[in-house]
Image (cartoon, rainbow, N blue to C red):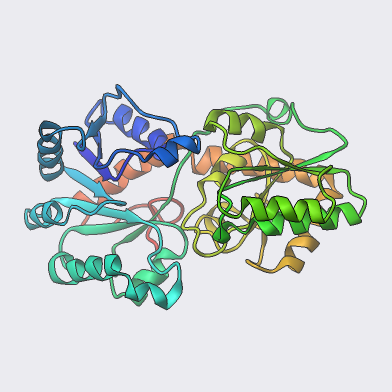
Length: 380
């Protein structure tokens, strides 16, 4: 039995959960410790009800006790996003294989050392967890650096992430809704500072000045939205920039099918960036900053996407100008991105790799056959 515990299930975790349930012939459960907040539902997150592998521990005392029993007794248990320390200590004391998964801890640099949550985590790790059968699934390329800084999980880290659905398509189908004379650029995130929506407006202004035929569609809401809208008006970009607010995830996927370029401008506080998975899986040519946790593992620069230096507007502008003037490059990058997602980051492939990793750890002294890709050692 594999048990996965987190705060709540979302559409970035469900695809792998479904595959683990299928591949283990039903010997998989996802434990949801908290009810999803209304703010997430309002922003387009789907609800999950009547799912055979989902245990909602928050619903009642019976579900909570069932969750505890499953977590303690499972052959393999994974936790992250929520830390039931008493349960973890009990489980590790029995020698059972356990994984912690998570993004980087030091998103704000050394200031994170003042975080009570991080201090509590590190106290438990060094007092109760170190030396036990506990391993880490790093959701992002920079997490291992943080673990080394914190002297945690040495030699016990593996590459992980978030894994969205990848639909099998032929090339004609992949690009069937693209190819107009207007380059369609998509930006999708919360309008908050770490996402840097202002960089998208800078791009729009430069493309307008360069005489490029384009549209910029921005999806999401947030506290910076009004400022961005004011800036669009001030720079006379209303003809080019469109605001769409929050949409259900399924509708966003259809919009990605029509976009030529997906622009991602987040800084290092973006632990992973699952929307990049989604855009690449739909054949978009992604231009991303190098700071999100997923960029280094998903994007091979100029092949499966384009990377610019985080916060460097000049670097972003030079690269997007080259791209918008070469439609064949847009198509090629989108195609290679889709193939990478299908062949390396699909939920089916990832779930099978995780089962193999857990088996290797159980019967091969913590070592795995994987030397690269998801579930391979994340060298620290």
